[in-house]
Length: 76
Image (tube, rainbow, N blue to C red):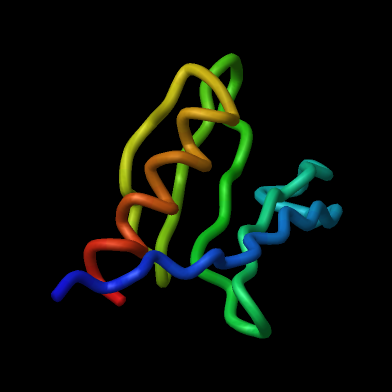
């Protein structure tokens, strides 16, 4: 018997932070009340972090979001 897939709502929140003396917009992915990852702009690329660990550099914000969701899906 197969399991049915559950719909899970992922929220994207943005907040301003001062990082290395520069004000940057940090994008957070939230499921329920848990933050599953953050994406920081890095020049023309984006860096995705999960629990403080760098997942990688991505060319677009969407690619970073996709990587965080894939990582969360593997390790939940």
